[in-house]
Image 1 (cartoon, one colour):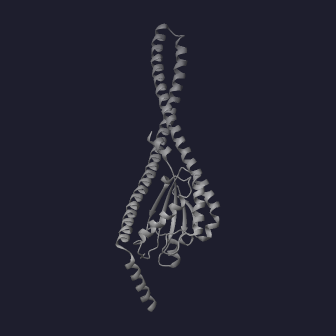
Image 2 (spheres, rainbow, N blue to C red; image 1 turned 180 degrees about the vertical axis):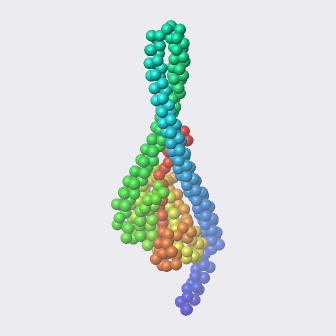
Image 3 (cartoon, rainbow, N blue to C red; image 1 turned 120 degrees about the vertical axis):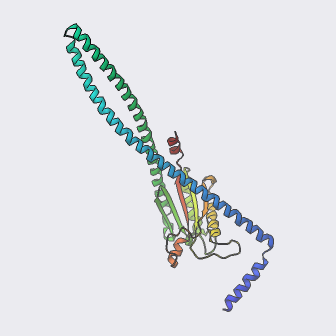
Amino acid sequence: MKKIILSLIVLSVLSSCVSTKKYQELDDKYIKLRSENVELKEQLDTLANKSLKCQANLDRLTIQYNSLKSKYQTLDKLYTVKENAYKKLQASYDALSQSSSQTLAYEAEKSQKLLKELEKKQQELAKERAALDEQIKKIEHLENLIAQKDAKLNNLKGSLNRALNKFKDQGLKVTQKNGKIYISMENKLLFDSGSWNVKKNGQDAIKTIGNILSLNPDVEIMIEGHTDNVPYHGNVIKDNWDLSVKRATSVVRQLMKNKHIDPKRLIPAGRSKYVPVADNSTPAGRAKNRRIEVILTPRFDEIMNLLNN
């Protein structure tokens, strides 16, 4: 009890030493960080919406492709029927040429009319087939682009797993889901309790990640800070929102040490306690929730341009 009272007295004395100007500066930084966090969440929502739009457009093109394919099959059957009719007409025309001139003239006129109709149908079918071929080429190109993106993502995941293998027993995990790669790092690798200063082992892990990401410039990099549900109390920052943002920006600054990574690719965000991956009622669960997630998303610029055109 005496130790607690003594600690409270020390904290009170330390707090009184902070000048009004220093407090105002910290408050301004807090407001700025909150504003940046909101803006970054909006950017994340925009990227998610773009990804959903891309998937919706792909689904729409697939439906169009199936519809055009069905139409093509119908037209192909019609073409076969007309082609058979043409052959019969040609045979009839040859036979009629040996008949009387009056009958021949009548049948020839009838045959010529049918032949013109057939030619018209063949021209219409050719146009439909050309349009279908163009749609098929576009869809095949789109499928190839998506397959290339998936292959690059799989290769990137393999490279990360091999390079980061020595950190896995320190709470680092690489997973792939929903077309993205997630690098999850628990606080025991990165931060001491209540701190946002990256530890030496954490710096080494982030440097390794940065080296690989510098070789993959077509991947967006989102850095999310997560906390458990234990309230944070301190003088410099206010709560778990601030702590999660500070830790995310600390990781960003470590990645920016690699001069080959364009800062425009980096998006820090704080998620506080609201996206847990384990039960916060146990120490082990809370330890898993205190983490940094580096989320790697391939750019879909080329695919979006193809869909828009």
